[in-house]
Image 1 (cartoon, rainbow over the protein chains, first blue to last red):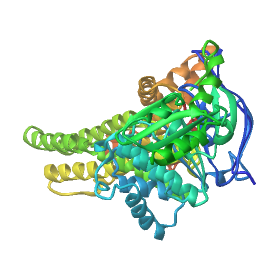
Image 2 (spheres, helix red, strand yellow):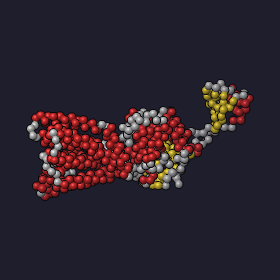
Image 3 (spheres, one colour):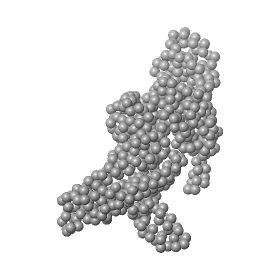
Image 4 (cartoon, helix red, strand yellow):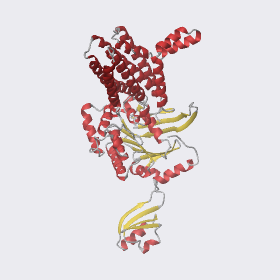
Length: 313
Length: 258
């Protein structure tokens, strides 16, 4: 059984005073995400990522199509107990403290009364908010609110977690913590579906990604499939204060950083380069084929659309 | 189901308390104290009448203002601030949310009215020096005021399910004003004939009959309240609130939460 099956889900908003105009937000979307997968949903702002998530959460009704989560239709009330959701730039009841908010959400999620306080305490610990747990959320910074958001999304131990731009607005430490949380969720066997436009995060975390633009799916696949070793180049890193003279003519590009040299050579020249390093007693750190980055794939997928149509939220 | 409604209601109550809604009690306390002292100084034999009239009218007006201005934001504020997303992505049905919000606000108003009622009785004790059997209708009047709040909250919630907060406030207040004159409206309808008469009759019976809840004057004069009136008013308030809340749920059920 797949974790998420999106079956030609489609959304068109009616806008204007008389609701006479239509605005396309999502063209028929078909996707399957397996259990235990970390799936990245990539696209620029306004591509249709948030609309897809809102459709899956039942916050907006679809114009056509349907979706199943853990084999159940999305309008089946039992689904909601199995999922966690972090909206983009989450807003919470700012008159509540973090502890009160999490307790409220635990109540709504059906966490048994005797487990509630322990669960809430564990989540506050996990997201590093123990000391500010008694402070009203109106006094929280954006990064702290994002942590509260992550805590409420996984508080009730859901099987499938949906995160809408979870790294948005976070500092480097905050982003790292979110990455660690996603990896932890993966290790617990949970399915994570997260939307982002930060490609390095998707590349580092996801088993598979989909690219959406203009409300239309542009491509989907494993990160390794989408970033093939097609460049015919090899990156070599070694310890040396400068680029050895014998290597200068072979390196397509070379960069010295402290005692480290990072050079790119053509595929097939590895043996020759290794000989030079051996001869000059230079310590090799790594030698890896250069992959095209996810960014290149993303840009390629988006390029034909740039002059074309736009989509909804 | 019941527990989820109760959790939403309690959170709504807690929000109202922390947003200092109950601070209106201070203004009410000052008003009723000043009235009691002033009336004690200048009135002869009508202190009781003046205090009950003034006190109950203030209870009603303070509550209606709170019911309208909080009621119109109950759902729309949650949509605007997007706090609703993390609630409705849990096993909470939309109707449970709306009903929970309704009970949260009416609960706040009941607590508010309870404290105001204490104020009214203290003022009454101050001017009359003792309670008497003729004070009992004051309790019935307070109960009817609470029923009035139920209907006003339900209307505010209904209008806010499809309209902007400002328009919702205007609609609810207009309906409250017209409904407070519904006896007169029904009188006009009886006098009119033909299509005009039919239309006026429909209007007169569709707008909530708030004048039926207003027994402040009878209570001030110590007139007894028939049990039948208590029963009818209770059923009427329950029916009207249920219809308005059902309308709000039906509209909210189909709403896109953009």
